[in-house]
Length: 211
Image (cartoon, rainbow, N blue to C red; front, side, top):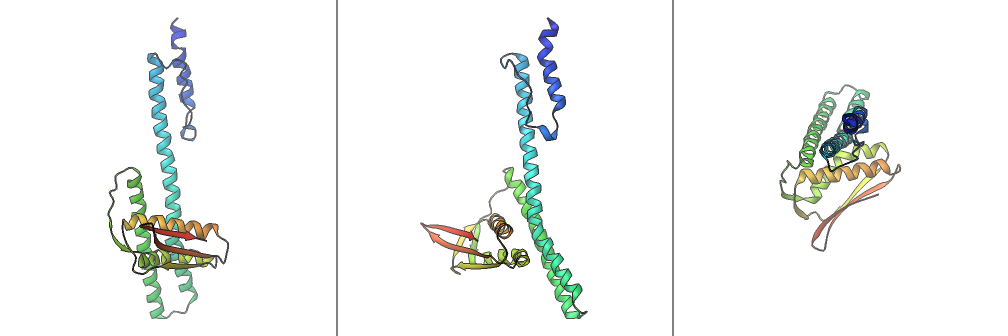
């Protein structure tokens, strides 16, 4: 009788030993959810579900980090390669160092953006809304990603009213717009024109990225 009563526990233990970080979608067997052993299995399965969700978030965050950091790192490499090919003119070298420092600052801003994204996904990041002139803002984001577009002979054009101002969190908007531009550059053919348009429609501000 004791053996028969403990058989579900033995089955649960056997399945638990087989679960790894690559198989968190598996769940413990629970033939009778109404008894004490069944309720224990439910608790374990709920824990596995939370662990699976946490691992999925970590995987997505790693992918986002790789995606976001590629732009400033590519720009740093491109500026350095150009400097190596040029003659040793002091003023040109100062300009190169200045460009590299700018890209390093952008890299630092991207890291801050990723940390902001991580806190936002865990509901720890409050919005910081302020007035933003869209024309200048979009132009700035365009400059950050142009080095990637240049690699594929693509051009980025902007169409917007220069007086258009919106109340928004600039960090979140920069993150969203740069992601759209990254995808447009990556998935478009060489020589493509990528157009950023901002306008008012039905009392809402619309930003479109089209290839």
